[in-house]
Amino acid sequence: MFALDNLVRPNIRAMKPYSSARDEFQGEARVMLDANENSLGSAGPDLFNRYPDPQQRAVKAPLAKLKGVDPSQIFLGNGSDEAIDLLVRLTCTPGQDSILLLPPTYGMYEVAANLNDVRIERVPLTADFQLSPEIVSQVLASPAKLVFLCSPNNPTGNLLHAEYIEEILRGFGGLVVVDEAYADFAEAPSWTTRLAEFPNLVVLQTFSKAWGLAGLRLGMAFASPEVINYLNKIKPPYNISEATQQHALAALQDAPHFGQMREQLLTGRDWLNQQLPALAIVEEVFPSDANFLLVRFRPDATAVYDYLLGKGIVVRNRTTQPGCAGTLRLTVGTTEENEQLVQALQNFSSSR
Ligand SMILES: *Cc1c(COP(=O)(O)O)cnc(C)c1O
Image 1 (cartoon, protein in one colour):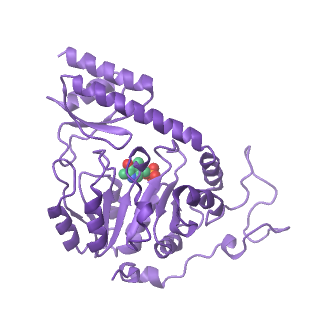
Image 2: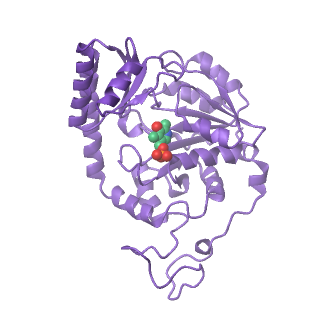
Image 3: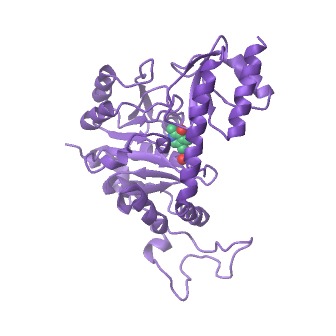
């Protein structure tokens, strides 16, 4: 049986969280002299003199509706990166515990582990960046406190097979974090629809990709209310600024623009998927359920990377990532940017 309390660090179970002025009194009073704020107003064009809601209720209400979950199942972080860091800190005692990664994958899991002096176990994905029965067995045998499953995976773009994720959810002893930063670009249902079945499931999503709000820094974690309570217990009290909360609320009310951008990016992905394989320098375009394509170039991906840089086009060189030799990661851009990219690749291809 899954017991969250056995996974949470003893010092975190025992500690008392910071109780902010806004925790102790919520709502509108006539005279607010409890938080050492400035009652006169704010420097700058906008009024931000009051501390923000530490529980972000105004944002969570429409977000819960959109995602089909309860507000008590939502944690908001200063980017998903904050949620990743807090999940590591919640479960792993420094110098003692470990997390499990399936490379090639997103780099921040490793950074969060290193920052917190937490060991990393690695079980590589298959050559086509998938889970397999052997990999699932190794995951289930691991004593790690957390496993990160990135689906669609960065930098490879593919969804991980759902049946294997389900086996991991049923058998793994720690928390299973499914990072769905790119879920808005995938056809598959979100794992948020399975939260009631799996008390050890944490789903990460973000406003940085399909919502077009990377500069805002707002990430989401969905999990049982018990896991969410622990994340709220250890987060900095005012981790989501008032400006971010107001802007996120406005974005959530602008769903048509979100849908329209999403469609345009998917169209751009389809177009690049048609164009790229025709180039002589392209060896393989990996299947993508995200807003980017991992592409294997021949004979020298770094020469392609350098050529593009010289033309003012920057892509991500992934040649040193495990299983990714010869690859560049290309983000889907505007129609014009995609055309410029393909044109530059054609020019490079025919100049050789
Ligand atoms: C981009 C990305 C994120 C988003 O991180 P934020 O901190 O929310 O911007 C999370 N996970 C993966 C795999 C990503 O590629």
